[in-house]
Length: 248
Ligand code: PXP
Image (tube, rainbow, N blue to C red; front, top):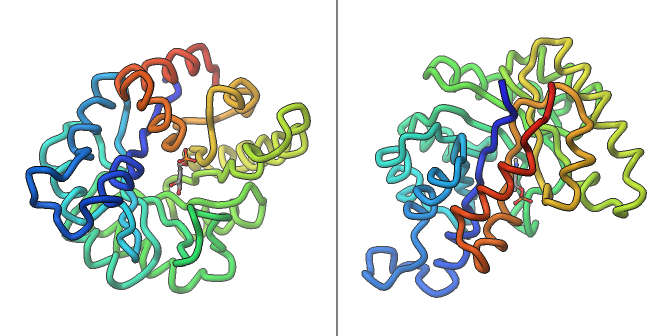
C-alpha cells in the first residue's frame, strides 16, 4: 500500500477566526474549512484531520460535524484527553482519533503525549473510544518507552512526533532521523500502524522517507501556507507527488 497523506486543515480555521470568531454563521465568515476539505480531497488527500482545541482557537465543533457529514474521506480528530472533548468525540464518531497533549499556552502541539506517565486516564479514554468503534492513535515522541506503552494500552496506531526532526538543522538531522527509524521499527514489530506528523514539509520530506514502516503522514501548516500561493488542491498534489515511490 502506498504512503497515505492526511491533511490537517486547522489553519484554514485559524484565518477565519482571526476576523469572524463568534460570527461563524455570518455569510462573510471565510475561509471555509469545509471547502478546504473538498479541495484537499480533490488534490488526493487520503484523510482530513481537525483539532478542536480546548480554547477553540481554530476549529470549532461545528466544523468537525460539517466535514464528517459532507466529506467522504475518513476524518481524523485530534484531541486532548479531557472529559469535554471525549463527550464531543463520542457524538461526532470520527473514523480515527489521535490523542495529543494540549496546553493553553502552546503555539502548536509541542512534544508528544506522555503515555507512560498518564497511563491510567489514557487507558480509560482509549477503551471508551474503541467501544464506540473509533480507531485510536497516540501522538508520541520517538521513544521506545512511549511506543511500548502505546502498544500496551491497546492503541491501533502511533503518530511519531517529527517536530524535533523538522526543527533540526537541514544538514544535520541524522540523529533525529535515527530516533524515528528506531521507533518505527519497534512500532511495526509491536503491530502498530506507524504514522508521522508535525513540521513535515517538502524540504525535509526526502529524509523522512528514509524511515521505514510509515503508513501515513499528517501534514498541515506547510500545505495551508503553500495554498496561499497555488491553492490547496495544487499544494496537496505537490505533496502527494513528492511522497510517491516510498517503499515500506
Ligand atoms: N500531527 C499532530 C498530532 C499535530 O498536532 C499537528 C499539528 O496540529 C500535525 C500533525 C501537523 O503539523 P504541521 O501543521 O506542522 O504540519
